[in-house]
Amino acid sequence: MDAGDEEGLKQLDAKRKPVNEKYLLGLYERRVFATNISFKLGEKQVKELFAKCGEIVKFFFARDRKTDKACGYAVITYSRADEA
Image 1: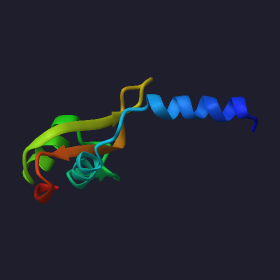
Image 2: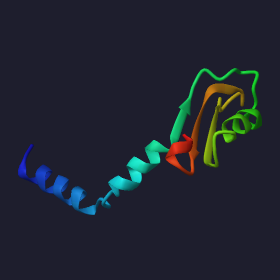
Image 3: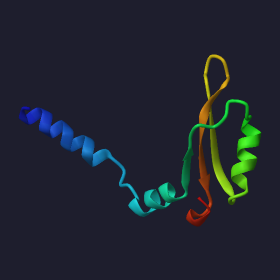
């Protein structure tokens, strides 16, 4: 790596926005990654099942882009960590 490459990396680092680590830690504590979900269940059924644990603020139900069939996993973000 020459001096020009090092200077370019320094400029990239200076442009990056600072990350609020407390926010990220709190976000990961509230998130659940559910796998091995039956393909027979629909998105609404899965969301209703996980809503019994607490208030859901974000819900992602994985589907195949071409066939629109369920992939068998979901990512659920709750409003509080103790609900996850």
